[in-house]
Structures are given as structure tokens and as C-alpha cells.
Image (cartoon, rainbow, N blue to C red; front, side, top):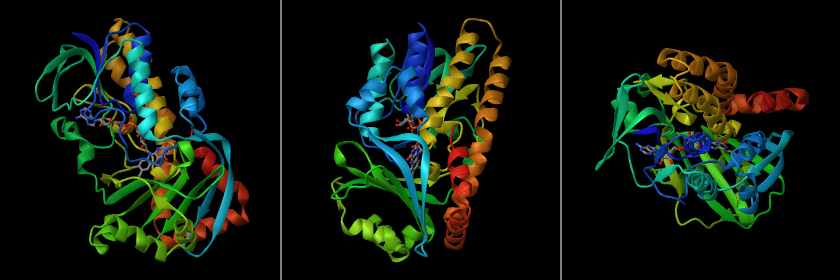
Length: 370
Ligand SMILES: Cc1cc2nc3c(=O)[nH]c(=O)nc-3n(C[C@H](O)[C@H](O)[C@H](O)COP(=O)(O)OP(=O)(O)OC[C@H]3O[C@@H](n4cnc5c(N)ncnc54)[C@H](O)[C@@H]3O)c2cc1C
């Protein structure tokens, strides 16, 4: 029996695996995909990740992989309005293709068993009796299970999670491009029904990531290229940017059913971390930092429970309370910003207001991250 099984080897899963393996616990990560693989994400790492990556022993590898440094954010809206704000620190741009593999390697180097192409179908058991975790072909046992399977997954259904009932009409696409230099700026362009984040990752590449209401995609006959063309019609800045950019990815990464609504931190006694516990609106560019931080928050509770210092019920209540006190305000602000920015008139009015009162823009950037 393992001490801990982690379902999902993204940032939260690998972050927790590194810390638990380093503390001497037996850890198994079951990841349904393999490394390295491209993943849908804006690939913008908020300034607070420096400390977290350092504590995981992965900062040097992230720099060696060519992470791009960013110091400013530029927001535009359909009226032509533009706002530039200084970031509260130096942000990094690195593809998930590189980043997830760096963290998985680090977890392995500390003794975690990171297994690829292992999609978990079911988790049964409890903190008091132990768990059984099933993939298609095997079953594994553990004393604690961490759910780190991202925004949405089959386990949400088998664990009967309430978050499955949420309305999630947003879809997203991303690809890498070349041909343009953005210097140290992350750009966020609003268009009718959504927004597009553009920033550098390693090797001079530009990552562009669109999130939009699914009706925009339907109007474009479900073609990402058609949908993207339509977004140019309502934001001249975005169009001007893509006049010079050329896609280098073979195809777009896509996901649907994106929800930024609250979730629960425990379901079926499985302790949730990362997006599985709650995803901040993508426009905040803080989801990856939150995923790493939620692993940092959960691990001390997991350790105390495994050492017999706290009961299952204390584990559930203290982690839930720590998670909520650290993230609830940030999540709420992110939700408001997201719902506002996808409405063209609110995006225009919001940017105009921030131009009038520059401290408002700086306040929003600061308070949507740790
Ligand atoms: C459009 C969009 C843009 C974004 N842009 C940014 C950004 O610029 N900056 C930022 O910080 N955040 C951004 N985010 C948020 C960020 O991507 C997430 O918050 C972050 O990836 C969360 O990490 P995680 O480890 O919780 O989940 P993930 O990175 O999604 O990892 C979950 C892992 O679990 C695996 N998995 C799923 N189901 C199973 C299963 N049944 N069995 C085994 N494995 C499973 C998956 O393959 C995956 O590897 C964006 C999100 C979206 C939707």
C-alpha cells in the first residue's frame, strides 16, 4: 500500500508529489497522458511562482528551459481602448510541454513513482479505511488520495461532485506562433464574448490562448480558425497582432466546459488540489501559481494525518479552512473580472475607468494573485 496516490500529474499533482516524496513518504502519481505533451494554457506564470518553484527545487531547470521574463500587462477592448499596467513582480512564460515534464522529472528524482498513460476510472474507500484506486487494467491501494486531475474529469461523476451541475458554456483554444516580438509584455485582448491572452514562452515562441462563449464557436461552424477570424472583427489590436504572427503548432489544443465557479475541497474523502479544488478565471493568469500553492497548503495536513497526529475529520476541516482563507477572495474577484471582460461594453467601460484611475488597474492585478 502507498502512503499517497495522486490522481493527475499536472502542476498541483507533481508539486504535491515532490514535497511528499522529499519528506520520505511513498507516493504514486497516476497521469493519464505522457510527458512531454502540449496542454491548453496561457502559459503565463504569475510572479509569485518564483518562490514556489525554488522550494520545489525546479527554478533552475525552468530558467534553463528558456523561460521568458515579463514585467508589464497590456489590456485592450473592442473600442480601441488600451491600458498598460506594471506587474507586481517578474512573471515567466514557459510552455506546459516543458514545465510539466520538469516537475514530473523532479518528483521521480526524489523517489515518487510517476506513472504515465494511467487514467484513473474510480476511487473507493475512505481516510479511515484506506482507498482503492482503479485504472483500466490495475488497482492500487493507498492511505490518502489527492485529486489533482484538473478542471473536470470522469472522477467528478464517480465521486458525485456537485460542481458537475455547473453551467459551463466556455471553450478555449491555444497554439504557438512565431514572427513577432512582444518584449516583456503579456497582452489580454477582449472581443465580443471572450478574450485572448498572448505572451512569449521559450525560444522566442508566442503562445496565444482564446477563451470564448461556445456560441461564438457555433457561429463559426465549430472551426477554431473561423472563430479566431471573427474575434479579429471586434478588436483591431488583436487583428494587428495576428497580421504578423504565423502558427507553428500543427493544430490547436482545445478544451470545453470551462468553469470558474466554486467547488469543494473534499469529495468521497479524496482531498482536492489545483483546479480540481477550484480554478481561478484564466484572465487572471494565476491558475498555475494557485495549483502549486494549493499543493503546498495540502501537504502539511497530509503529513500530519499520515503520522497519526490529526484525525480524518481534522484533516478535512483544517485543509478546507486554509484553502478558503487563502483563495476565496481571489477566486471571487477573478469570477467578476471574467464575467465583466466577456461583455464588450463592460470591458470598454472597465478599461476607461482604469485609465482615469490607474491605481484601480494595479489594485486588480495585485489582488487576483497571491
Ligand atoms: C484557457 C485557459 C488559459 C489559462 N491560462 C493560464 C495562464 O496563462 N496562467 C496560469 O497560471 N493559469 C492559466 N490557466 C489555468 C491553469 O491552466 C490551471 O489552473 C493549471 O493547469 C492547474 O493545474 P492542475 O495541476 O490543477 O491541473 P492540470 O494542469 O490540468 O493537470 C491535471 C492532470 O491530470 C491529468 N488527469 C485528468 N484526469 C485524469 C485521470 N482520470 N487519471 C489520471 N490523470 C488524469 C491530466 O492529464 C493532467 O495532466 C488557464 C486555464 C485555461 C482554461
